[in-house]
Length: 166
Image 1 (spheres, one colour):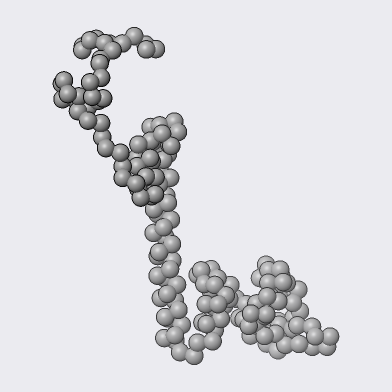
Image 2 (tube, helix red, strand yellow; image 1 turned 180 degrees about the horizontal axis):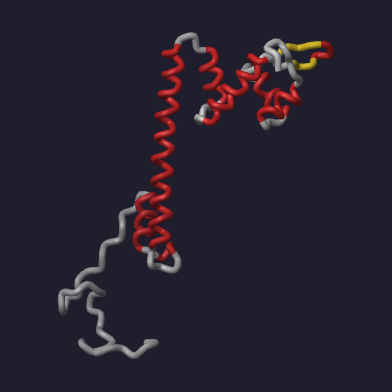
């Protein structure tokens, strides 16, 4: 393409793997200003194509259209760097949230319970989430000092093994 050549919206969109409505939307929010020719048809020149590539690169960095518009409008490099610092802080926050979510999923997958909802750790986390205290551990058995129900009677004498299925 010659430096002064222009292309239509269809060709410009196809060059970047975009739908034409994306370029129209970017124009409607002030990110693109392609030239207009007879019949109000859009014509994209090298500067417009460069701008599309910049927008796509900024989107890859996680910037939203408003942030991209601010970056483009910024006169000083320091303004653009501040926008990028803010984006970095937001990305770090989201990464930390994703790590915490992964930890919850890995804990659930590593649980010995068939159903994670039966896990004491899961139940405690749910109670904490709704602001309730975790249940107290069972009180020690009055007779032998071991944890269990108070006054509970043993179903079998100490030192014996129960039969399978009991």
